[in-house]
Length: 279
Image (cartoon, rainbow, N blue to C red):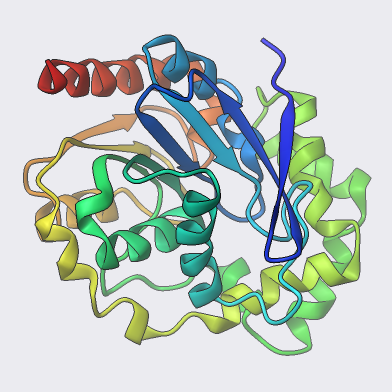
């Protein structure tokens, strides 16, 4: 199924997003990470929509085809973006799906608005103390070194080659969309600004997530080199004791595009359980 993107104007920014399903159906909001785009959810969006949900996946500002924030691209601004985007689409409550930085953004938003979260699917991310940045993140967080690293990543041929080694089964159009963040210096800097804005104060509210008693499914790549599976269990134990954990065997960080055939059954099971609760 081919997915096309829509655009809306939000605070004088053009925001690109994918939407499938009826506007009268319950909304599922899917938030991608770094360096990704809404195309992370290419294989999931049609499946979720086919179960009777309105699937909505924005390109976060600066990613995909969305304009970057006119000023610093900080963690706080991305958290606020969730509320602004929802308001623009008249979404009161959502079923939240998050991955990577999308989890740090989306779960941090959920700390402030737990009553707006109808269910959660959490993948390869964390908002619990104790996480140590992976080596590439540490480079991005380092002034001057980070700039050199993202500039080197703007070599499209080399970047594509490396990503295809990491995710051999990924569709070409997904990687093409992911790469757009590296095409211009102003968007490459979005990555640096976001990583450098991270602070412990934004993690301190993580216990607010225990207020969310709705269905939670935690999906993780068995061999994630960036965020180990330990954090799947920490997320459950410290925030969502009622959550179901599914570890996807022989996969890395980008499970939704690496092994969609393994991920989709768990996503479908999650929304079947949600529908049962709605009856």
